Amino acid sequence: DGAADARPRVCLPVAHVVLPCVHPCPSVTMTDKVRCALLSVSDKSNLAELAKALHENGVKILSTGGTAKAMREAGVPVTDVSEYTQSPEVMDGRVKTLHPRVHGGILARPLEADLKQLEEIGGQPIDLVVVNLYPFEATVAKGADYATCVENIDIGGPTMVRAAAKNHQRVSIVVDPTDYASVIASLPSGPTKEARAKLAAKAFGHTAHYDTMIASWLQREVESELLTPLKYGCNPVQIPASISGIGGNPLPFDILNGKPGYINLLDALNAWQLVKEAREALGVPAAASFKHVSPAGAAVYEPLPAILEKAYEVEGKVLSPAANAYLRARQADPLCSFGDFAALSDPVDVQTAEFLKTEVSDGIIAPDYEPAALEILKGKKKGAFIILKAKADFEPPLLERREMGGARFEQRRNDAKLDAASTLAKVVSENKELPAGAARDLVLAQICIKYTQSNSVGYAQGGQMIGVGAGQQSRVDCVKLAGRKTHTWALRQHPKVLGLPFKEGVKRQDRINARVQYIEGDFTGPQFQEWQSNFTSFVEPLTDAEKKEFLQANLKDICIASDAFFPFRDNIDVASRFGVKYLVHPGGSVQDEGVTKAADEYGMVMAHSGVRLFHH
Image (cartoon, rainbow, N blue to C red; front, top):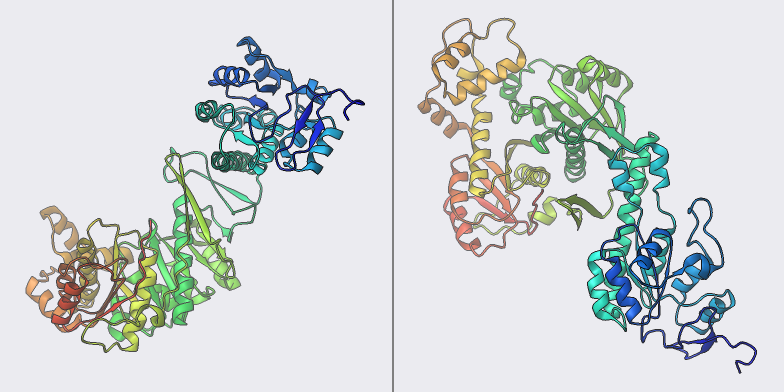
């Protein structure tokens, strides 16, 4: 045998089949040693050291262009890919490695059939592929023109990387010069099976990032409907900025009017998920008022008592369920809702649009709009009001990702369903009487804090959030912050607050601000004089004694939800000062027994949900 063809032979490790090879290389078992490597890199860092080590270990090196030149200058013998393929580089180097002998050599499995076919096309097994890609991202960053950027889109490189990564059971793929040292240390046998798998994972990440950069750039250049450029990111210095759908899909909303900014869209997407979940859990229209990626307020439809109609300045007005829900969401903390982003779970009707028309707000997201309501909103802010139409049946992918500081995070999205049956079933307090209204408010509060920056707690009553404490490092500070907001909400119903003698022409937001200032009462001298100018007559202070008397009589049966367990009883002691009767938190702390005992001392009803709701 072999008389008809005197070429050297290659030995296969699995079937131990010996077949001829086109180019001279020793007869080996494929897994024993690295015998043939293909190097083609744009980043030449440490290339000479790697090439010398491969040569010293008897590895045949295939290469192209500048990589081959750099190795020859370092005194390392190299075979040009064009010589190996017997096919010249063409089209100014656009086609170099796209050849069956290259990709067959990379993709060949340790099978008799693969090796026979590889021999028939004149190829040989390639055991190591070292490739990093044309510097596309750097080219774009330098401000290169369109044609130059396109020319720096690598085709052959990613193809070899993916082929080698796919066949990592046999082939080692190296895309990062920092991995050269470990490859050199592994010679002559080459990286282990486990190391090859890790290198393959890194390689697929490398090509995924590369393709993402190209897709993002091209979508911006051609104004693709899949990508929406933004004026800037969180701050004006953060340019460029854009938003796009995931996996080549459109965005989960349509922009009907206005030009949303980066933070607008963060608010909109969080707010939409909140109201959608609240609608599903509670069965009535839901609304939210968002500022800086946390809700200032959230609510579901519930008829307003007369005292709140007066406090919210809607006496005599007919409100649809959707309008009612948004009014209540905004009135949780109207000071913080100034310039909010609104969200509604139900289509926006004319009544809701007419109400929103009078408020200072940046935009709204909802599943649909009545034609007349859409026209009303389009006229807001001189035509700049942002109107987004959410795709109501869209479900986000199960995995979500984000990048920060050169690292990529991945996690399952928080798809925990929050309802009374699942989160309020475990009542751990002695008092186990949980009315339907309180159960509704505890569910609403949990859904609200699910989309609030942690740490967070939320107070609720009557289907409405009345105090949200967001983003505090200490949980008891959350309880205090949200409690202070709850006091302010309640005191807006005090007769002296409702009876403030405003001058004609004082604007709605100025009236809101003046009421809150009156309740807080911590004026400087000049500030007090400015504040008094809003009224037709001198206003006597609202004393601490008057506040205390009113709150003791009226602030009762409040619900509170926490995004993580209450770590100490001081949270319960503080909550008791704000009329809290019903509590839900995940539980699971070593202090649970003491915290529950504190709730029992106040006659509270406490449930353990078992679901932590951190949000960052």
